[in-house]
Length: 582
Picture 1 (cartoon, one colour):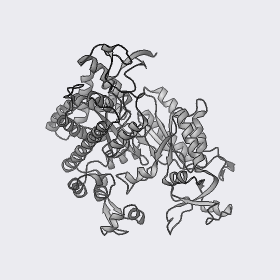
Picture 2: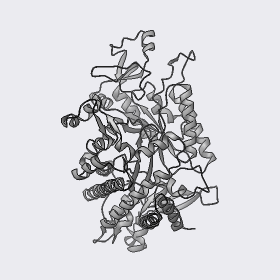
Picture 3: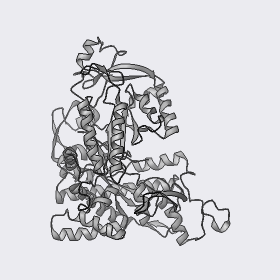
C-alpha cells in the first residue's frame, strides 16, 4: 500500500533469517527502525525480499561476474546459458572477453579462422535484450577487455557502430605497464597467448621479444607457461601488432569523449588493494563498476541516505547526527549480511562463492544533497573532509560489527581456510617474509586479510588483530553504487551515490504504474524541495529575482569542475574496500 509496508516486508524477510523467535522479533523491529531512518537496501532486495510467492525465481543480489569465458565454442555458449539464467533472476553480470583469440586467428578444430571476441559479444548482447524484454527489469552487462589484446581498438570503437552492443557497458583493463608506456611514449605490443604446439608449428622464437612477450594471463594450463625465473607463471603471448602506446591512449580518450565509453579499470591496482588478494585474480566488474569480482563472484548492495542525518539544514547551526548514523550503519550491516542467506542466485557456483566470502557492499546516497544542506560546496576543503569522515565511520562501524557477527554466528568460511604461501604472494607482500613466513607455509585466510590486506592496514591495530585472531563475518563491506533508481523512488530525488545533484529542476520520462507509455514529469532535487519547505518557498534555480535566488552553495553537476569530482572520490575511496561507480 505504501512505502512503510514495503519496509515491513523487507525487514520481516531479513529478520526471519535469525535463529530464534525472540531474535526474529528483536531484529524485525530494529531493521524496520533503520529502514525508516535512511537504510536503503538495493533495488533487488527491496523488490524481491519477502516476495517469493509472487516471483520465486528472482534474486536479492545486484552484482555478479561470469565464470571465465574460455576460448572454445562449447565454453562460450555454456556461459551464454549461465548468463541468461543470471539475468532472468534480475542480477547484473560482468564478463571478460579478452580471453578469446583475436579476429583472424586460426582455429585448428574447425580448420577456419575465428571471427573474434566482438562477434561473440553480439550473441551475449542479443541474449540480454531478449531476456530483459521478457521480464520487468532491463538486463545489465559489463564487458571488460585487456589493453594488450590485438582486437582492443575494435573493442574501444565498437559502439560507434549504430545499435551495436547496446546491452553492454564497456571497460578496458588498464595495466601499470601500459600506463608507463604512455608516459614514456614507447611502443606497446598487442599479443595473445599461444599453446606449446602452436609455438612449434609456427616456428615462434619464444626468446625473441619481437615474436613473443611473457604476460600474466587469467587462464592457466592450456597455454605455454614459463616455469622458472623472474617471469615464472607468465604465459607466452604471440605479438600480432606493435603500436605507440599514446596512439592507443588517444583512441580511448576520443571514444570516451564522444560516447562516454569505454570505462577505465586500473586492474593491477584493483588486485593490489583487494582484501582477498591471496586467492582471487579479478578481471571483471559488475555492470556499474562498483564491485570488482572474481569468476562467479556475487555481491549484494545497500545505501545509507545521508540527508536523513542532517539537522538544522541551511542554517549556521547545521550539523550531521553522527550518533544516529553510527546506529543505522551498525544495524544495516547485520541486515545486509542476512541477505546472503536468501540470495536466490540461480547457479551453484554463485551460491558457493557468496556463502564462502559473504561479500556485501554498503555505500551511501545523498552526499551532494547533504553537503548543500550543510552549506558546503562540493569539492571544497570542508566537503572533502566531511566525505572522508562519513566514509571512514561507515567502514569502521561495519568492520567492528563484522567481528561481533563472527563471534555470534561464525566467520565467513574463507577465514578458517588455510592457504599455501607462494613466491608470488611473498613478492606482493614483502612484510610477510619479514614476519618469518616462508614459501610453502600454510596461513589462515583471517590472517592474510587482517594483517596483510593493503586496505585493512589503515585501520587501528586492535581491530586488525581481532580479525586475524577471530576472523570476520564478511571479506568486503563497502561499495558506492550509482543508486539512480533508489535515489529517485525511495529518497525523494536526493543526489545519487557519490555525485552532486544532476540539476535542481529538470524533466524525466517516467512510466507510471499500470501504463506502458512514458510520461514527462517535472523533477526537483531533494535539497531544493527542502530549501523551499524550510527557508524560501519561492526559491528557483537560475532566477534573476532577488527574492527567488538560491545561495551560492547550491551547486549542480553543470557548475562543478573535474578536480572537485576527483578530490571527493579520492577522499571516499580511501575507506571503500571495493570500488565507486562514477
